[in-house]
Image 1 (cartoon, one colour):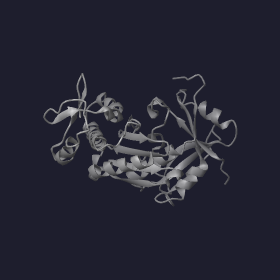
Image 2 (cartoon, one colour):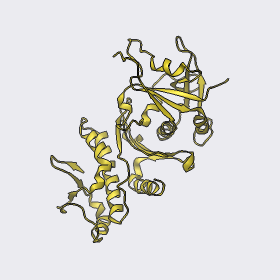
Image 3 (tube, helix red, strand yellow):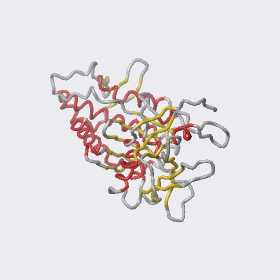
Image 4 (cartoon, one colour):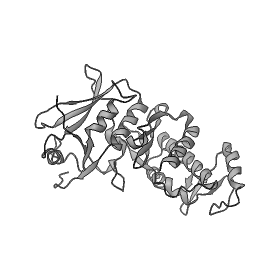
Amino acid sequence: MIFPDNALKGIPNPSFMNEEGNVGSHLFRFDIDQEIRDDDLIEQSINWEDDYNAIDYTLKQKKENGETQFKVGVAIVPREDIDRLMNKHPFKNVFFYERNEVANNPYHGNLLLNKNISKPTRNMLSAGLALAISKIVPQTNTISN
Amino acid sequence: MQATNSKNILYIPEDYGIELRLILQNEDQTFGGAYIGRYRELSRESRIVDKSWNFLQDLDQNHLVDKAKDILSIIQDSVLFLTGNGIDLSHLPQLEAFNVDDGSLLIEWLFEDFRIGFSLEINISESNWYLVTNQKLGEINASGYLSDIKKTVPWLLNFIISNH
């Protein structure tokens, strides 16, 4: 399967940011309480930057209740950095990604982590992903709350 | 450390006596205030923890907040110790504090090439720390639980001094 150069991670609200405009690592936390898949992996939603529309599409995504989903903006994470994490201890063979197109979102994908990974390692991975952010594109659309 | 209306003062744990004596023996060191019992004013390096400390002050007090304050105090103590020995840490960024959706608290130190974090989990025994670096600094991934945090913090500060 072909993947683009960048993953996109939406920033839901200002609680994920500091005053200097940097993202806290908790933006990339894996939710361990989610339903576990048959392959024992837990999912973290991203979009793939497949084309020039992907960022704008992500910025315009809405929740089911009509609210703007990512009120702050979108963080861009180079896939080569994700690959680097994926191939390094202690993430090798427990951290993956996938394309997972869903209704009305052709860009959707997941970062995937084995459910048995310890909390320190999970948080360390989140920090590695946050450290890899190359750019944050701010929300410029009219926000509906 | 505890906050008052006028200033922040640092609580000095009893088991910190040896390092405190070392600081006080350094005649070049000033603390910007008088040593009063087991409390003293923070030095100018207190700005490293001030922001996250104030964030915690605004939260409902619970065991996570208490533990987070303990960690900030340990960091502050270590910073003061190093400063007292002539190491300039005034250029370090401030520690950030975040509420996390899963109910945990995150104290994080953000640098251009690395991140250091302390995660206070609802199950306090699962609380943990991490250090991650980018390719420029060799892609270090280190983490652990907080059981030995008094030894970990000086090690992390040593890393910061060497790489920032």
